[in-house]
Image (cartoon, protein in one colour):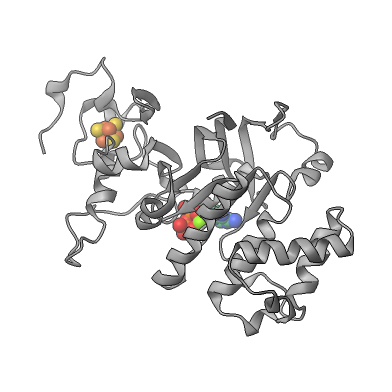
Length: 331
Ligand SMILES: Nc1ncnc2c1ncn2[C@@H]1O[C@H](COP(=O)(O)OP(=O)(O)OP(=O)(O)O)[C@@H](O)[C@H]1O
Ligand code: SF4
Ligand SMILES: [Mg+2]
């Protein structure tokens, strides 16, 4: 697998009158071509800010602070998305990179039929009317919607159908990467499963790479190949879904996995306390006030994301050789 997107040192925040409050800090992440990468974390940890930063669609007061994002396309051409002029970036959106924002299910224009909304978008991106109509039918089929949906107004469709139209639109220009933010939130579990399966089928058929952003570990478990666990604006752990679920390294990943409702319906031990907001991110490891394994260096030094072998990464002092393991509490 080749790397489609190399994100390095990406930081973004909220511009105040005098300073920026950092929301997303120094993110390093590789996205492999053709994978479904889940980014998971509690509400408010900066997932949507990161998604919008990747597409360079941050809206004020959100602002980019630093970083590089190298996109390498199939033809071997490499582009730094953060350096790309806005005009070029506009050409890239939809065609190369596509974004399904959080809450997009309700973003279809209520007074236009689906046909018009889909063909207008496609014509805007260079297809003839005839090609646009053909492509609209094709992509609707890919998300298991009948062509008659083209004649519907959004309010005539269920939430799941509207979300499928949004996915069809997102993949209609055959982008290399789709960033989907909370794609299935607010849908019932059956519809959610169907939509995730269709997403995986699109990846298999078209080779599209997906970054799937969610607060729901179940969604990641169902469909993602790899996952990145985010806490308070930083990445805590990266690895294959199979490995992370089988043996989470980072204490936060361990707590997230432990708090997934078990088959019996009972919740096992979760986390105490609340995730911090960007205005009061703790010093050192941002997880330290809630971490059951906290030890000496944690409140002062921020751990770096380091390789742990077998494609796994973790940002935790427990995995740093310079710290004495006997300092670790055995809780
Ligand atoms: N435009 C904004 N104005 C004020 N605060 C913002 C803005 N955008 C983000 N924030 C704050 O930044 C933090 C991260 O927000 P973000 O939406 O990125 O989190 P998230 O992980 O996507 O959360 P959720 O799971 O609820 O969607 C939150 O504390 C949020 O309140
Ligand atoms: S660095 Fe320390 S506080 Fe942070 S997760 Fe690791 S053990 Fe816990
Ligand atoms: Mg969000």
